Image (cartoon, rainbow, N blue to C red; front, side, top):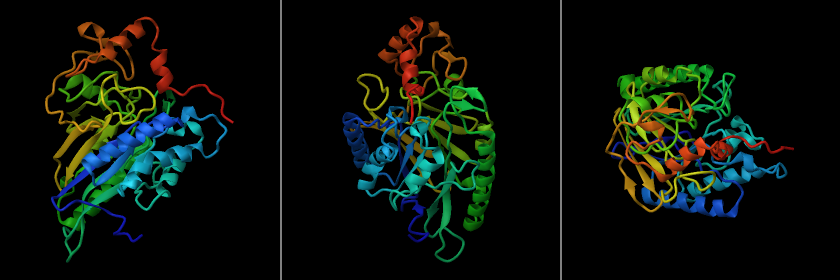
Amino acid sequence: MSQNASRLYFGGDGGFRILQLTDLHYDGSDAVQRSNAEVSRKLLAFEQPDFVVLSGDMVSGYAWDGREQDWYQRMHAAAVAPVVAASLPWAVVVGNHDTESGTDAASILRLDSSMSSLSRTLRGPQSPNGTDYLLPVWVRGAGRGADADAIGAVLAFMYSGRDECLGVPKWGCVTPAQASWLNQSLGSMLAEAAAGSGRSAASIPVAVFLHIPPPPYMDVRNQVAIHGTVAETVGCPSVDTGLLEVFRQRNVVTVQAGHDHLNDFWGSIGGVAFLYGKKTGYGSYGPARGVPHGGRMLKLTAFDRTFETWIRTEDGAVDAQIDSARARTRQLHCDDAALEGDGGSIEGALVVLPIVIVLVALAALGGMWKRNRHRQRPASPKT
């Protein structure tokens, strides 16, 4: 494939539409495989995006029985099959459960990049662990030379680890070394983009995709009016590795995560919008009973820091998430069920889901083991 053929391009209207599919959790069961394929096909048909991002936990690695050596490869192929069938380019980030069947994050990126010429996933050789990469989005004819193209936006894909951050257990993070790589690499690419287009580097938007939400998601939940539903605590790492400062310094407009299957809210802090995806898959837990599965759409505009976003659900409905409100509770610590305000119940900014009441009751009875079982690696033996 030629360099130009593999490039991502803005459309003629200056927009670039991205569909985020998150937390598919393929687990080897026929029921999950059928349902996941169906919801993915529906969302792709409804939106017909320019690009698809699978933002982690494509596979429930903990479901591997330790016998079939190519099990992960088979599950991953099923996850991307609807995108391949739609002839759309895609890229992936690795989630904490993807690596639980013996395949490390760099190997998953290498596997995905070899699956089809439509994959734009890169095994980032210059990032600390080979797990992070950047993709420019080009604008035809916008360069300084005759018929030259120019970079109109940059997409960043970051691995957020697994079950510890700098030795602190629970959830992984983008490490300081990765954050430093992101800072330097974005700086270089934005300088190249500015030189090629004759525009300022500050005019070129950056969108970041990762799986585990960093601590600013909890700050958004606690401090600003949010759009959408908060129905569980933010499962962020307890260590703040300084990502917000990198985001602010390097023109990051949006950050998109998954991981917390009951949340689909977004809000802005420090000039950066932090968005949850919409739980897409039928594996693992969530969304709440009666709530449809879906995906988040993001529309970027070349050389512009504004963006559009909405939720598309499997029944075809669109949730523009226009209204906003402050959450009525405050989360005290990352992934801590302890809340203050309004009696300590977990409430949506706009919607209070029945499952929330159940979760709080289970917590009071010591029944939170059920949720943790789905979100932590089971102690099943591996061979």
